[in-house]
Image (cartoon, rainbow, N blue to C red; front, top):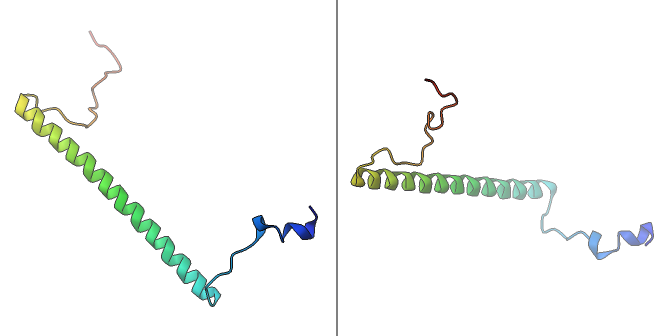
Length: 85
């Protein structure tokens, strides 16, 4: 494949844009970027809310069965690094 044929290949063909100017293209790109960021933030909030709901359910069920310390939180002294006599 020659250098000239490379740019006429379907792999390197650019799509024609509907944007009327560079400013129009920039504003559409910024709008798409903001939509992506807001969707990521919404997914993080939903994930944290689901984990908190599961933690509250475990605390409630732990209280019902007589083990109120039951939760998803990692305890600092769960595995002591030194054994003291």
